[in-house]
Length: 458
Image 1 (cartoon, helix red, strand yellow):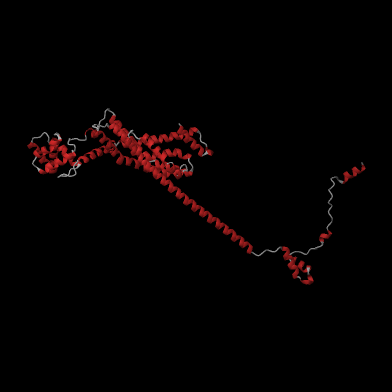
Image 2 (cartoon, helix red, strand yellow; image 1 turned 135 degrees about the vertical axis):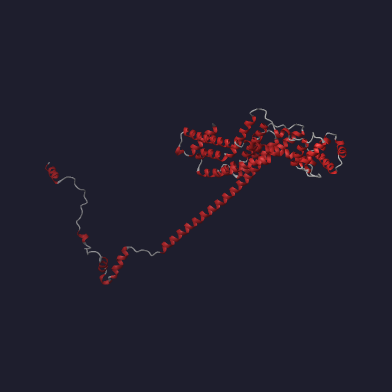
C-alpha cells in the first residue's frame, strides 16, 4: 500500500493541472494487473507444452556435475583413451555380461563388434575385482589375473584415479526422487511459470511502465525507454551467466563437499528445481543493478562523486542484499552473487564518470557556441551603428526654405524666397494674420439676453 500510494502521488504531482480522481488511478492499476496476469497465463500455457524439454534443460547442470566428477577420475595417461561416453557405455556392457559364462561372454562381445568397447568392459571387470582387495594387494592381483600387457597397464592406470565402476554410477543424483504423488506435476507448473516470466519479461515491463510513465516528465521518459531495453538484455545475461557458469560450479562444490564428508547426494527433484530457478532468476535480477544506478545518474539523483566516495558503503550493502536474496545461507553462494554485483557497481562508477565527462564537453561546447553567437550579435550591432553614422545628415525643411530664399539674389531677398517656396501653392497674404479679430478670452456668460433684461428690471 505504501508503494501504491507513492506511485499515485507521483502521477498526480507531475500533472497538477490534470488532477485525476483516486478511483481512476485504481482503474489504471486494475488494467495493468489484468494485462500482467493474462500475459503470464498465456506465456505459461505456451511453456507448459514444452515441460519435458524444460525439465531436461534445468537438469542439465546436474548432468554436467556428474560428467565433471567422472572426468576428474578418468586417467589421462592410459594405453587406450577413456572418455565419459565410452566409459559409460562400457559399464553398461560389462554389467550385461556379468552373469554370462565365458563362452557366452565371448559370443556377446563378438556380437558387439567393437574391440575398444570390449577392452574397456574387461578393464572395468578386472578393476572392480581389484578395488575389492586391500590396496597393497591390488597390483599383485592385476599382474596375476591377466597376461595381456596392455590390459595390465590399463587397469593400473585406472587404479590410480579410481573411477566409478557401477553400471549406474550417477545413482539417485541423476534420477532424483519425488516424495509426493503431485510433486512432478507441480514442478512442471513451476518451471512453466518461471519460463513464462523470462519469455514475457519485455511485455510485463512495458505494462508496468505504462502505469508509471504518466507520472514522469518528458526527459525522464526518454531515460526509461532505453533503460527498459538494456535492462532486458542484462536480465538475460544474468540468467545465462548463472545457468552456464555459476550453477554447475556451485552444484559441483556442494556435491564434492558432501561426498568428502561421506554423505550421499540423494537430492530431491523439488528441492533442486527450487534452488536452480531461484538461483537463476535472482542472478538475472542482480544484473539489473547498472540499469537502476544509471537511471538515478541520468535523473540527477546520483553522481560520480557520490558513488566513488561511498564505494565502501555500497559494497557492504551489496553483501547484505546478496545474503538476503540467495536461496541458501552458505557463504559460497553469497560470494558467487555478491562478486558480480560489485563488479557491475564498479562499471557503473566508470559509466557515471564517462557520462559526467560527456556532459562537461557538451556544456563547454554549448557555452562556446553561445559566446560565438553573442560575439556575432555584438559585431552586427557595431556594423549597424557604423552604417548609421556614415549616412548623410538630413537637413531640416527650414534650411531648405532659407536656401531657396538666398537663390532669389540680393535684389529679391525674401521675396525670391517666398516665390520659390510658394510655386506649388496659391499665393496668400503673409500679413493676413494681422487683420484677424481679437478673441475674447473672458469666460462666456451663461445667461441669455432676455434673462439679463429681466434681471435688470428686477
